[in-house]
Length: 328
Image 1: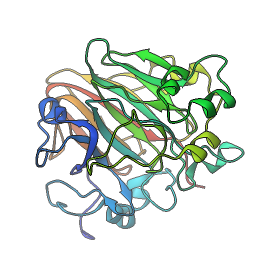
Image 2: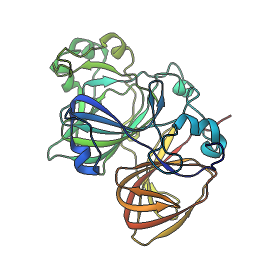
Image 3: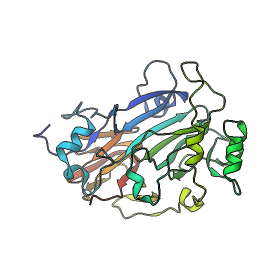
Image 4: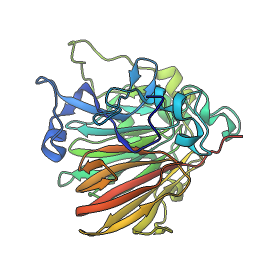
């Protein structure tokens, strides 16, 4: 490891069975889903206690993401700050065969400087697939206040307090910490977030877990962490052309990360060296980054100090994620 220079790597997914999950990640991306349990989440890039990505193939196969951070340091991260000493992003695919719980993540205390604190989670959903009529719940309907939520907690009435949104593939939504939300059944998304696994469930559709027991709810914590001031223009952001050698549109920007929706035609060749660490989520097509092959469903980490050549062998569609919080 120590003798190997920074280079692009594809990470191996960690599959998470969930009672609301399905098997669609095998259908969409050919993911080797284990067993027969419903798989709700595929953690594609993570470095959290008990959850650690490793390199999927190549000379660094089996090396952990934490080891890459430790060994390559600024050559990997560029100016990106760590989150609580760890890799500053968590990337997932979510397959919701059924509705997820109505939930909220801890909001920062005071100003947004607390957003790297343990538990704080800002996230964005990019819709990969949506069944006809599928919808998700994000934010509160106009006029909903704390008393309404307290009265509806752990009842079906809570769903009526959140804004239901019809979705199609290609839609994108940003959810700052404190935004109540639920992914709806029949939807698959790529999720970009700050690294945390803290969720407060307010209602879970009277569902039981895979163990047959009711799932834990967190009514008091959830109600205490709901924000009532998240503007619509933050959740659904205006898309704009991004500066890039390939075709790219900036679709999400927040104080901790941003990402572009990118496309490149078959046979295209580009030099990739921006001085920033990037995480690429490959949605369709195929390409190589130097000797690192990319295919649909791959999530690759591109070190900041690495100059690479992108060669597109099948029209490529991907999300290009960068960290917007710099190290001091």
